[in-house]
Amino acid sequence: MFIDTAKIYVKGGDGGDGLVAFRREKYVPDGGPAGGDGGRGGDIIFKVDEGLRTLMDFRYQRHFKADKGIKGRNKSQHGANADHMVVRIPPGTVLIDDDTGEVIADMTRHGQYVVVARGGRGGRGNTRFATAANTAPELAENGEEGQERYLRMELKVMADVGLVGFPSVGKSTLLSVVSAAKPKIGAYHFTTITPNLGVVDVGDGRSFVMADLPGLIEGAHEGIGLGHEFLRHVERTRIIIHVVDMSGSEGRDPFDDWVKINDELKQYNAALAERPQIVAANKMDMPESEENLVSFRERTAEVRPDMQIMPISSLTKQGVQDLLYRTTDILDSIPVAPIGEEVAETTERKVYKLEAQEDDSFTITRENDTFIVSSPRIERMLKRMQLSTHDAILKLARTLRHMGVDAELRKRGAVEGTIVRIADFEFEFVENSSYY
Image (cartoon, rainbow, N blue to C red):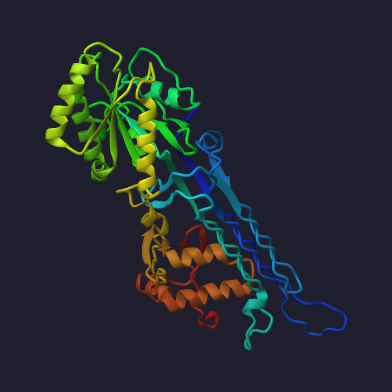
């Protein structure tokens, strides 16, 4: 089964907590603080493996969580960093943040990797907080939480040649004739509902990968029919072989078919109009095909005089070998990167973002007799600080004072004993400058 979309959840490992500890050795009087830092949580890394071809694995495993960092130890020993989690993905996978719609990475080359969720930093132990004024701090930090997000994965088939055309024009049959692929073939529309890949051995030592892509219908660029499920794969191909039913067995005009499919490709992505294209005039073993081919050549010459038209029959294999030779010659003459698709630029592009400045803003609301303080900076601090010690409470009080929170509380009417809530932490307002 071919799976080309998936939605997963990823979370980097949390950092290890810092430790409050002191040296207590027989011959080391007043040893001082000796609590070590916690280790860093593991990152989640997606890495391209050319041996994979589908996103099937992500149907059964949708949650990826990296390990946590190890807690700091005494004697100022640093907790161990967690190992990174490496997740293998097939080439051609596009990673998208499901919440923001931002494209995180376009993974096309074997070995290419990207960090999709960073692990949290380890908390600092009390050794880090020792100062001349406080030589024995009982203060340490909790580890930082790892980054978490939902990702949408889209796989665009990585093939040299893509077979396009209306349903039932003979694309699957052609692929089965020229490669070892075994696509399901039947006398009904939309036989192919997922892309089929096959390696084509031309016979002169050359080979290429061909993809039989789901049939198009009018309006596909707007998502009608198989729509975008088909078109996303066409973008990756280097050459388009446009298979046309020259017999008109479905009651359609071959030239109109060719015009409509090209129009759908162009409206989906204008660059596809510039992609090298060969028209495979299929079913030449059928009655009326020769007459239709003459008319097709004349009408096509008025629009695209340079268009290459090669008559073939997938059933009798007439002209198939010549089509393969011509396709390989064109492949040898063009770059490996898809023409018109800025894949190289996308994979090499680096986006630099300025570090977010510390936001000291806060808001105060009142709920009955309780004042509620909302501040991203203070809430992050509460998550990090281990508030079980007196030193940690003093540090929080100093921060509130320097940010102007206590002064604003007084203006709003807070007095001794007033309840103040920040996130899940509640305390009494105290008018005592000695705490600062």
